[in-house]
Length: 593
Image: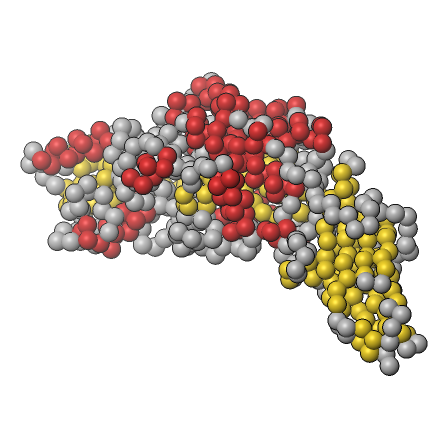
């Protein structure tokens, strides 16, 4: 649902709404709560007590076994991805869900030529063209080899290239301090024709520039060992020149998302939780993103188990395991685009989207997407309701004394398509290729100056790459947020529980006497009970049908009325448990004399 026009009143959690349609419904028997009783929705399920890091780690062991049995990875269009999806589907089916696959096709790049020689060193292994970087000319690109002048050779700013003649050169830059995109931008603005990024930790480097940009130049990632060999050659007097050749073409691929929704709860106010299921081709992808995908799987299982005792939450929860994220957010983008084009009402019915991409990094932070921009100015438009979604996470962490930090609300994960279509979003993140600061070490421990996940997008992203403490903290936080929002999204999108719409209270005259006429429409997809309370009496309605109205006129027994308000209460029922919300509706003064 999209936010409705709401104005807070003095009453707790009440709303003032206007404009009225539909025919009246006759008064019926008593509403479940006694007159004047205040009964709010039941407390959210304590899912944070049920979803543990140990349980999620057990599921990650299953993913590792799947990768081990399938060439070491779980990438799109591989047996490893198929087996990962089959595992998720079996667990969901056993828990009582009915998972579905959503297939999609897309076009992507295939490498034709990829080679690099720098300072006489031929790099032949673990050579990766940066995602979103352009091709070289057909004959390749040759130029002088240059480095930034900052101490660590990170090349993050224009100052790092002061005094360097980088025109038409190939820039040799170390991983570290800032995003790959910042390094490439600074080098290209200094005049470089290409960039070589070398790892500052053991292993390969498979960089991404985040998105297409005309400012990028051809860029390649190489392992630490290859970078050190090139540096040693330069120090020994080798000719400082590099030749980089990269050409690619476009092919069509097919993949699929796995979707599952709770069988109970309102389907017109859905809470979504998503994580990508695919890995890169070079590793098992256990932190990126087995951690997020297995965390929401355990949440789904425990939510279903809890529902056996207390019923499903009021709002339906839809879980999504996205395909082809690692090649450009393909699965989530297809899902949202398909809704926008073919079922826009269903897109509007998504109250908020929660994204979990890497929640077990070995040098972790406890990061929350900074939807309120209190630390980082977002480079994207932040939909209304996102800051309130963020608050669900931060309030939880504050309540248990868990330190947390803001991470940029960048749109560089599967929430991108949602926010581009106005759906509120937030999420959690333990870090990827950014460097840990001294302040973050003080909050969370770990090692300053190295990456949150030194094995990001590498063959070393295995079960041994997941920090159990981070995984436990984040898994419980995910469970808490799902439970809270499944119970109530009022703060996020203004949708009350239950939702009454088109409320009016009108003071009018009849035979010299002032009356107040009150009307309220049931905006739920199920029957709701309604109670209208005025200073002159009250009326109860039971089982008001969806899109139908409760109506009553009350006499004041006076010739005039001052302006005032009436209270309209709505009730729905979940396995015998009433869900209650109150609305304060104003009426204007009237004189009938």
